[in-house]
Length: 280
Image (cartoon, rainbow, N blue to C red; front, side):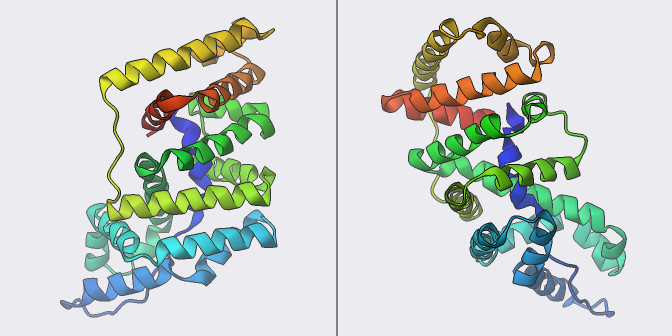
């Protein structure tokens, strides 16, 4: 179910504009570019311009802008994104030909998308259990409110492209209440900052804890399916999503998330962390 990372796709629309640069290929070129890159990354106008086409409404737009500005103004985040940009080879292209970024704008956009998505997804492993429960509850809303075809995309990863992925993420945010939007972006903010700062450490569970948690989770799922009028079809959706209907996939997603949220005790946290590991 790694494609449940769709829930963070809204974040991936933000990318700095190409910075100003010097025509001189001197020693200061990289530093000059870095300063411009980070200035673009932190531009409130850039963020608002990226959000505007998706028509989230004034209140939700402010929630997005406020949280994204906190993220991009963190030095650890800005440095991490710039380091990844350098590691990708784009910096070398720029040093050879400063105007090359204009010719590679789509590639640069895709790189930025994936970096923001990566920070949020990886950072989930570092968060407290209560934050993870908020994330699960927001994921659960996808299966309740989105068109059935979206459930198939989540189970199979069958996106037609990055544009569709972003649009689906935006549609989900539109369907959320303002309160859920605020909760979601607060979790994203904490996750991205934790990953960029490398603190707190990743919360890991051992094999014994994993087995205990999976046994408890499996029991809840079996009990749910045995009492569900479409339990057999939903079970098929878990095992072989390609043979299931879109509706059955949505119900399978609901059963999965609701079962996780219904768990009690320390096993609930262990199984939630198993789930978070599975969607990386």
